[in-house]
Image 1 (cartoon, rainbow, N blue to C red):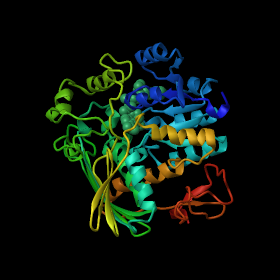
Image 2: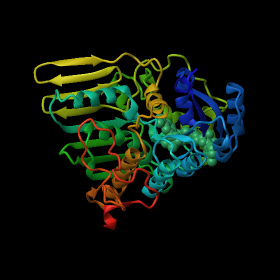
Image 3: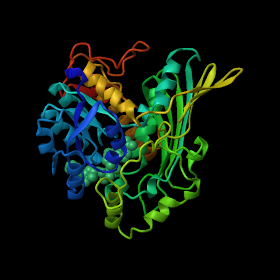
Length: 432
Ligand SMILES: NC(=O)c1ccc[n+]([C@@H]2O[C@H](COP(=O)([O-])OP(=O)(O)OC[C@H]3O[C@@H](n4cnc5c(N)ncnc54)[C@H](O)[C@@H]3O)[C@@H](O)[C@H]2O)c1
């Protein structure tokens, strides 16, 4: 087999819920192969070794050093994303990193710098902006057939706050709440469709359950440089479920049972303490006693992140799990997408293109950093009750702005004079 045709050899850091959701992809996509893992949970390590006949280590250092590993899939809790990316890069391994990229922009800069210096790729995903209906909508928008993008509406009502959580997932200062975990998806989708850098946001967050004292909801207005504006709402308090407006197709693309109303609260009631709740979360993930291996064809349609409407001069476009609705001046039509043969194969498309064909990924470090910048601005805008500007990154060497306008259809702007800037090279406009 030629080197280009060899499957990408992946080492998994963190065998929890995120890995459980990616496992159907890893099992079904022949372009990747799982060769090692690490996790402090002995039961998850034992299961991995049994399932894949491959080593499972207790920590990231051993995983990153393992010679079989070509790319590390970092699926550990948010607070480890920076350290685990740096460990992988230091060992010369590419990184596929779960959202959100990190907890601070300073961490993002370190991660981007370390991966560039090591000559390895950094791709941040899975994130719902990889979902085919959003990517197809973006291609339709870029065709110019509908005129300019003017306005975007994105909404999602879920039971996020009542799914079993680790204690830090309910502490904003540790990356908890819906802004770090869910705005990371919604902002990314809206940025992808707007096609222009975010300039300013105004937001308000809600945290009204004292038992789960972190953001459970937000509303945000976003303004983009090209004049597009967007309205984003998220509510994770588990009452209305906006999948009702998506034909009861859930986030993972599978049919959902409308009769399970209130199910998250009922299941959570089994846990009497924070420690029991964390155990309940682990129980259902890989290696846990109630873990269910992926079922074939469990996801019939494309994954999604709630209703989204993109208004252009001559049409409203609505990505949905089976394609895109186009509501034009005189007609409405549905542009169908074939159901996915492999769920989340778009993530492997991007990883494979980067590692085997040298293609620059869309969801690279600077892209994901910009999404985190918006999420942090969302929190700040709510706290300070004011508009918050999103600052471009400026190179200290040549004043190149990372958000500088680039031609329609061009890849992420490349740095013109300094292709591998190190950690201190970037500064924000506030330093100027
Ligand atoms: N893209 C998605 O759909 C999606 C879904 C869920 C979670 N996530 C992301 O994945 C990340 C993990 O969240 P989760 O819900 O899977 O959490 P989780 O608690 O279910 O899983 C985390 C796993 O990491 C392990 N772990 C903890 N510390 C570790 C360390 N130092 N080294 C190696 N492994 C370690 C834990 O034992 C656990 O198995 C988060 O950043 C979250 O945002 C993404």
